[in-house]
Length: 295
Length: 251
Image (cartoon, rainbow over all chains, first blue to last red; front, side, top):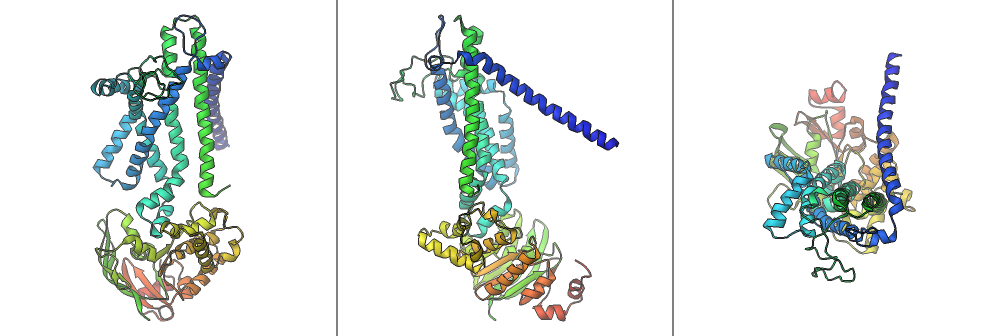
């Protein structure tokens, strides 16, 4: 009887904790959407911000965030997956490997503001990249790479040993076994990790303050020459992202509707991250089904 | 019968653990040879030496020689991938790839460079026939291999191994995860396959060794205790330890 009562209490407490977390999450999202949704319009999403007048939008910032995300992922995904494959399949169990793993762990727990300052010193100053998308993307790569490496390593380690042996026993080379058997099986886990990394990039502000900068030049969305300084595609121009913009208008915005703009921008940020999550999960499942011929 | 596999003074260490001690034996071609013995006696280790699957385990060192069709498989210029193509393996747990039935069988041939659809169709059919699975799956080759029963999955794994045209088939306790009826089917299949392939099987099940194999090798603590024709080994063992084991006194 006593054991049963304890069991019931434990179950209740655990359900209570889970509910509390759900409640916080749902409450937070609902609050942000409630405050921000009414402010979102096509005009808001596409027009540039105003510094003194009301009626500014977040067009360039939204574009900057998405573009920076793409640039960062272009660097992070190949590097992270490559290093993850190395750590999981090629690295010998010795001190060097243990040291690399330690470095990856330490790097992943670095405060992002520190990475931002590192980016300022190295990419912006030392490499003369100025405040630019490229400097921001590199800083975010430093910030993201450990996560990608660890996720890939764990995803590959999670592939059953029997599958790897089946490939090798058929006379496949190590690389063919990894690329054609193990990576497809690890794909959903790697994708989930990539989404997490992407979410962090999209919402990151501190690492970008001193790398991608807090301003955006006047952008001409008809100009697709990536070397022109007014082209949105130029990776060497400064770019204030959505998250940085929210921080900036909240702390020093002088437009009369600054609180509304911050609320609207926050809602947009949340919605994009959610869309990204659901979309990528759906895609991951679809691709996994295609790879594995399961229904 | 002619020996296809010749093992000479083979010693194998896992780190400092001496797992195989000075093993020499000849394994005849187109016959079934069974390795029996208690857990940890080295029978699986020896089996996995025959296609160098032990290479994957760090800290393993192998001394002595294993010749298959005259070529030393631990020699300097051996192509391990070609060796494994020639020495197929079926594992304890059925391990089909999470792909369709067709793709499982076509996998090896495809990665070894066969692209013709027609040729692949032929290989898939003949391999599935060879593994006595064709009649059960021919109408749904596109279905996931994971939708098959355990016994069917194991026969699919045999078909997958046959598809790259090996000479030798290693079966590492290939029926220990299966029900009795599936086990029987695999045993019958092995009997048919020995007309074309040299089969070496590790089994925990002495009755299986007695039913299926032509020769039986009894291992204990990394050594060969007795190697004889199966009938002889089970009816008239020469070594006291063999007799103790097969009469169920230990192991």
